[in-house]
Length: 116
Image (cartoon, rainbow, N blue to C red; front, top):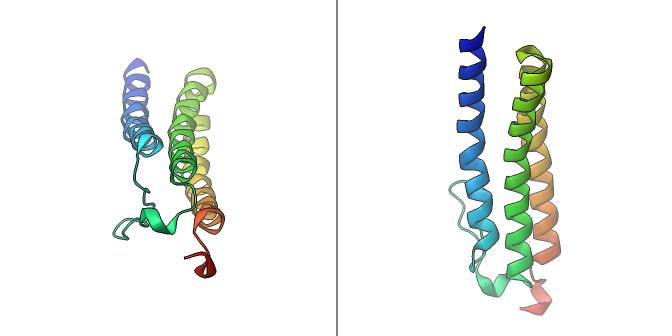
């Protein structure tokens, strides 16, 4: 039983760490950050407030990673099955929420064609 808990904890922490690091890097970036793999991030000239755009994208990733840590804590308190279900919800719901939030950020911070 102890071995499963250790493996479960290590896997979740290994999963959360890169996500949180991505968030920190995006939060601190001076150039506009990207969201989609393979798609180039916007140019500075295309964004109205690069700092706010990057911070909100960074926080989005940090919150996703923090969700995995919350799953870990719930797993330690309530059992691995509960944590497993929470992680499934976190991954699927988190990705869908991030996609929607990214689209919202694009609408908020991309300059309109008339502003360029």
